[in-house]
Length: 269
Image (cartoon, rainbow, N blue to C red; front, top):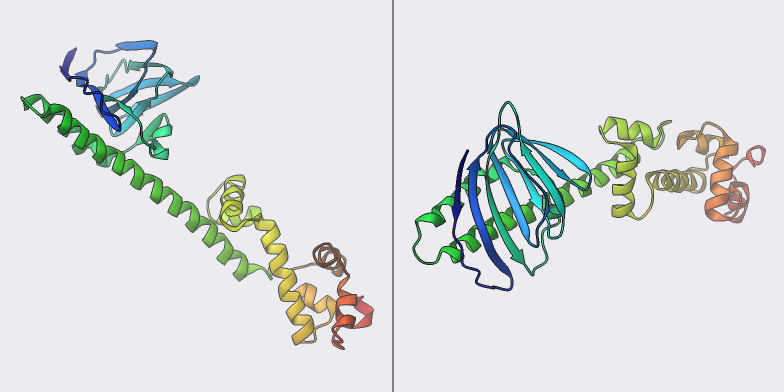
């Protein structure tokens, strides 16, 4: 086992305060914990494999991943028996709003390898070591913040894709499950993203979209109820009428009468 630790003086800085830093090539099966720490501790896996346990869950890690130990969190980690890991770590206190990504236990961040390796440069410094480690920590936190932004953007993109899909295919006999399958997303996950972005469920959005299109067909194109229902994706007039009444508080036939549209045939009321 090869281990190197950088000595750091506790500066008691308020925003970001580095406390420890080091790297280690672990022996097969080498473990640490279970234990609790009073500060953040991030390990970045440079090579090999290992297991990290937190919140009753075991995570299998490999090169390019990092595991995050949060203050007052009980954790355990162990090097793999066949390909034990080598990692670099940094421990710190923080009194800032942390990136949401840092709340996770494990992250895959191969792009941060060179940033974490720069932590080793602190060993060569005779002065300003703590300031240097702070600068690297800020780089890491900045990268995690960008990850938050990309994830939020991706979620927004999924919601917008779903809206476009519904607006393009509302006239077909589609279901929300069909749409989720085509987007390669779990239906429940897509519904949560959609509701957060749009303010209603995809099914509610689809129903309202169909009813609005039907109203235009009946009022401007003088379509019969059965034709309007068919054109917007309903298989029968009864389902259409029921949805219309639930949304607008009146049957579509009454709507046609109130708007004086002769195109709504009485047989369809």
